[in-house]
Length: 193
Image (cartoon, one colour):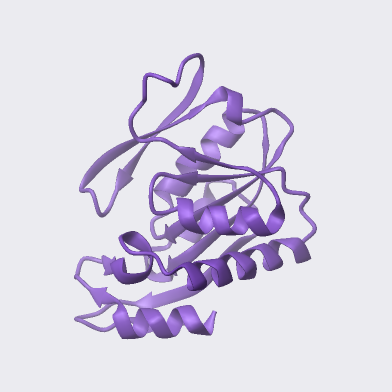
């Protein structure tokens, strides 16, 4: 998506160690117009694949906006994995742990079983695909719910971190779509593919 790539080039900062700061458009401040267009682009891509999506799953917090915009275009609900269990989350839950590159430790993700149903077709939409750990944790929740993971969409894929290959190696043979791909982050540079 050219508009997104241009914004990443203009506003993104390479903080080193593979960390891309795009807080001005995704991870802290949101641009509603850009977010809407990203959701339209993502939804159109998966509509063309005719996947019969029933629900979108994402991770709290930066995945919520792109997931919501995509869901609005597909007219399906969004459920997001919580990082802390609120007192309102009673009953059985699906829970996974994934290492977080930006948080510097493990993150626990939880979804109430009332929002993931057996037999449903689930699309995961998140902000980044880097190592694939968070996306695979979400994918395991889908599997544990006996639902069908039909695809993954991300705003930014850092291809040099091999997350796509890790997902394929783990047996997730599904369509993976990225709106923007970062091929290298050497020095202060951000190379786009």
